[in-house]
Image (tube, rainbow, N blue to C red):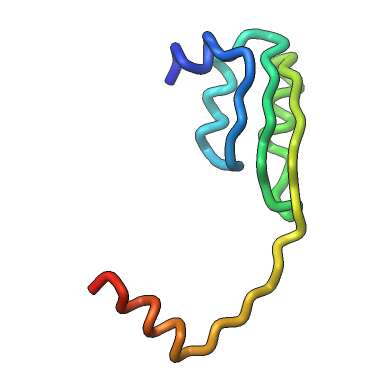
Length: 79
């Protein structure tokens, strides 16, 4: 991961702990983080401190309701 992030010119990824590897990026690496709009700015703040070009693609999460019967059936699919 160190080598991958160090050698990358552009990185696109889902919001998560994997972005901690930004510490290995060179300045001016381009980052696109895909995330829910309700998540914080931890990755953005890290990128700014490291002089990394940060952009985000975010969306307000949708509320989804699933009936208890459907949820049970989904839960049991892999059993």
